[in-house]
Length: 516
Image 1 (cartoon, rainbow, N blue to C red):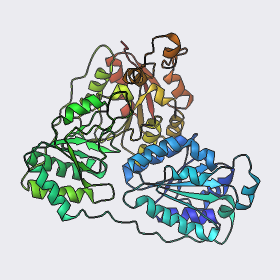
Image 2: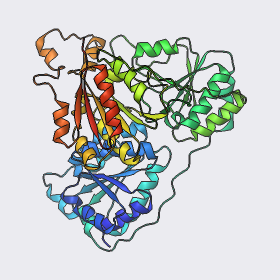
Image 3: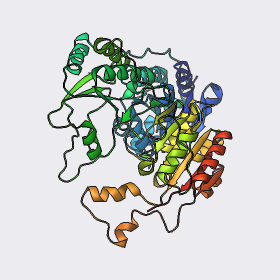
Image 4: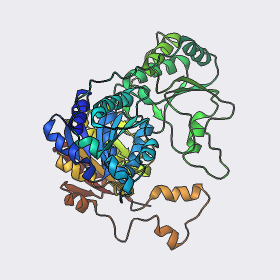
């Protein structure tokens, strides 16, 4: 058995049975080994950023890693933006990066680069296999590293000669680490401050944005009279009818200041203290109010749900969690705006849908009209690097066949990884992509004002407008085998959205927004 065969067999035995791939010459023995180990599902992506983003979406929906196969340093570099997003989401992932054969590296061939350094910027674990006899054990260690709290990206560098050499054998799985138990005195201290009578807020993220954590957090907030918020960009928020409602902190610093005004204690549960997205002249970077103390109940390496449960028993053992009622808006009519699109989504979102949100400015208000829709998941742009939406939707659909994925996508962001549509068509994935066509990088127009700059002339405005020519997403989708339609009114969008969700496979709706 060669190294590649032992590697893939070890991945399968460790629960990694999907690999999103964009291979090259150095990875050909890995590709060939897929026929020897047919349990591994290989999914071809036309760009490395699609492969890494798809693995992120898969991991968020399964809580176990997918594999990613990348070609040398440049291939890894092409995937770095979505690896950055996955790192911020704490997504478990095993990334295999092919490298030149060890004896070839000294010749500094054109694709030679420092893969170890690149991988280190986004990975919690990096290892280079030195010989075929070691690669399976290295793979088992990579899976354990990816799955041990706090979960993350494990990168295994696979030299070509390690891959093709004989003498390898599969390795047994290595048990992943367990989450830490939050000490009783920490829970008691947080309970004391929540019942002190001073204004408090709880900010949840990570595992606390799933049903068990949300129910416990809601019980705590209700018993203590505390405000309850979710981090601005949760990796996966379970929401909808029957679940505790929780408001995401807004992105805009002024709005965060309004939400947290007067708060004297901010309790973090697997979340970071709120900060401005960027530095702005004459504005503080930290969004924690003056005079507010920050307390950490649990972080990503802790048993977050157990800590919240213990806290709920101390603060209010008889308190009930809030429940969001089933409440859908009326179908909108008339002009197509983000508000009318949001109302249509709230009215028509399928039960069990997985919403991937990269609508940027156009989807900021979408959580409100969809809050009372049937239960669904909401996945966000955790690291702020655009080009995530279409790939994450792809991986989520692979992870959850039979559930409809709804991708809310900005037109500018879509163009970063538009080739994900081809993979969706090839794999017959149930993804409805809603592209908000406002024909500009609208968010940057606001950022110009935020940093005190002005785009008053044609040359500066030209760098923010997506025109000359306008992007045609119906044609782009058709070119990759995906049916597309264009909506210009609220009625057209509702009809097209309903039809797309009723038909199997991927669909694209080009939403031509009425732009003021």
